Amino acid sequence: MESLSLLSLSPLPWIIQSEIIYIVCNYRRNEFHRMIKAEDVFHVAGVSRRWRDTVKSSLRLNWKIEIERHSLEDYCLHTENSYNLLSGHHHTIALDVGRADGTAPTNRQYVTANHEWFRDDIIARMSQININHGTRSLGWMPVIGNDPLISLVQMTCHYGARIWSLNLFQHLESLDITFDGNTTDQIPSILENCLHLKTLRMTVTGVLHHPEDLETVFANVPSTVTKIVWGNQYYSQPKVYVPTYNPLPFHLLPTSVRQLAIWNASQICTQAYYDFVMNNSIQKIAQLNLSTLECIEFLSSHLSPVKNLRLHLATTPPPTIDITGKALVPPMVEVLTLGLDILGAQTVVEGIFNHSGPLPNLHRLNLDIRVSSLHTIILFIQNSKSLRVIDLCVQQLFGRLDLLDQLLDAVATSPSIQKMYLKPTGDSILECLIKKQSQFNHLLTIIDEDEQTIINTHNNHIDLSSYTIAK
Figure 1: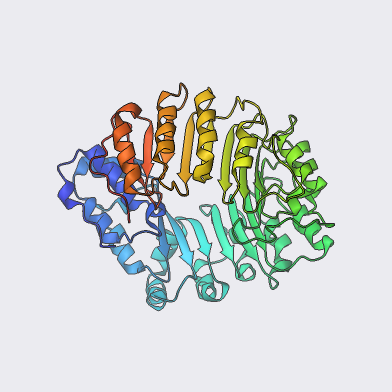
Figure 2: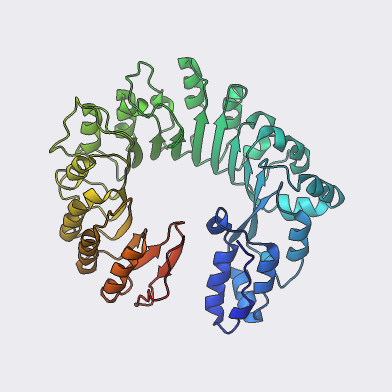
């Protein structure tokens, strides 16, 4: 996408411009959609002194540098200028290492000639590091150094954990790490050096066949950890339930854990898993498929401590299980996230919203569903007195704008709903929204296909006249 230039927006009030620059600078919104260059940030910062000083004093910006792609010299030139927002006190660095070999040789030469600057302005400000390839990352290891970094609180490390200093793990609060057959022996030593870890995401590829290996890993999870993700929702296997005689040793995990996502359809259907969730009052879990009657009874139990459930169905329940008329979720659930990427999901939706009780504590509903499920959800919205927020993505409407119209009516007349996020998928949906805009006041936030916020109606009015669907 072309480089953004906002100099023409100088007549806007400074508070509006501060919102604009926050979006421009926030790499998380732009990482996969467009390229924001350092000079753009520099230009926008010159609109007014009052605006610049206000934003620099309050903006928390974690600026991403892909060290194989982004020029460190350009970054240095702009941050040294006091007009640049990147010179603010709250500016931190997310360093991305090992993606591709683009400007890496030039950057290495620049770091060699400006080692003190790199140490003080990059490494000392580094709050996050993403290590994407062990071999490519190896050349940067001596430059980054071996000393513990108090500022470094988040790390993503894939395929190369062996080559990195254990000191870098000491102050981490979040670690996302993938081990393969060449690095498995490093797991205990790495975990032992995570002294402040709160969130652990771990994937082990093709190893740990022996129960004693699993026990070693689970026994070394730090006692500070409150959230564990084992495997990957999109790549982990198996996604189809197969009875296992070697359940994960959940009993060795620390009792501090309150959030647990095990992306393995077999391991979440074991008594060891049920016991750990129940005995340790796990409040947030992820459920992959509804594979056994025991699993369904566990999820819907009145004794369930689960308040936040993420239910993803990649396959339909097996034909040996009849879920018709059965409760499927905890009766006291507060946040429910549903991903129903299957045909015949209507029976599941009915089990959740018609047979799991009134769900009196449910205040947030995140839905990625098919159009056939909308009618049941509309009836639930009409009767709910607790629902506050809805985040809805309908995979295909197939022309059923009448259902969308009923949904908008239910939301607009709800006594409790405060906000709805909607991901529209075509101009026909836009026309329906325009007709309804006067009903919503501050309710509706519209999101385009890239999940970028397009319209936020905090000013008690929705103007959709200039809205265009992102192609």
